[in-house]
Length: 311
Ligand code: 3HC
Image 1 (tube, rainbow, N blue to C red):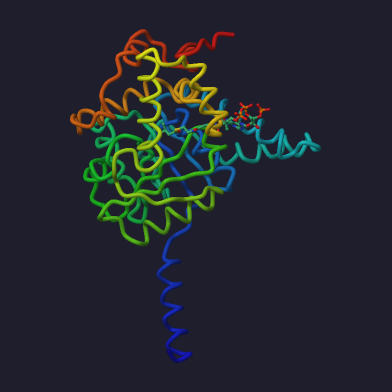
Image 2 (image 1 turned 90 degrees about the vertical axis):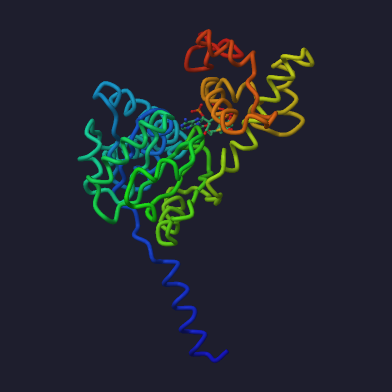
């Protein structure tokens, strides 16, 4: 290959890779655990974030939890410089605006990330109205862990500007971002999402729009099998947790992790998959899990799950 042909080809390749608009303005819809975490890491990366939820009261609690998490980060990052730590926290918080009006929040957004309730109809209704309110260049992404991205995207007229951006709890600590493309996702959109993930300091992996993507497809059946072990009386939650931490090097055992992410979340994901794939034994309902959820024992957030977390 001649030198000049090589130069033209490599310029074309780098142009196609760099054909993306960096995210400066981000709208995060839903200020729960995941939405707040996403807002926090984006604000920490210098992006201007508008965090949206239904009431100012919910939003002020979310900003409070972002502040607490930032203080934990600052304690490590500025171990010898408490003043620097305080400035860091207030600088990052200054990048987080809040709004109860999703349409106005997306009016200047480069990217919208949705982290609301896992209900397809609610998500479709939201995106159908955001599609009219957002500028033409805005990319839409969902952090859903259980609903196919394409099923949500079809509520909009910008299928090529769609993707999944699946984060992990706790978002500030977990280094992974799964980026999902649907068949219609353009290369430009996909590259933007990958570059955005990198700008947050995350390592990105790609997956097709399949149930659970990579991590949950492996993690949820593993957590389900752990509960089935207990249901059969084969081992106790405590021993299973100890076994997986010391025998497999996991930071938390499956019951600690279930309590951490919420038993309702695990049940919700399993139920959705069971409905779609009733013959898959890995997705079958688990009576013990259903009973705990029915009793409102959802894990750390309610003070009790497989373990008691009451102080
Ligand atoms: N914000 C900021 N810093 C945090 C933090 C947070 N939310 N959580 C932990 N940290 C940092 C702090 O510096 C903390 O020190 P501090 O207590 O003095 O502030 C330090 O981490 C250590 O934390 P902990 O003592 O609480 O405990 P660990 O050392 O075990 O770390 C952990 C906590 C990072 C959560 C670790 O246990 C872990 O990696 N657990 C596995 C989590 C996991 O698997 N997540 C994925 C769940 S699946 C999912 O999210 C998908 C969804 O779709 C269901």
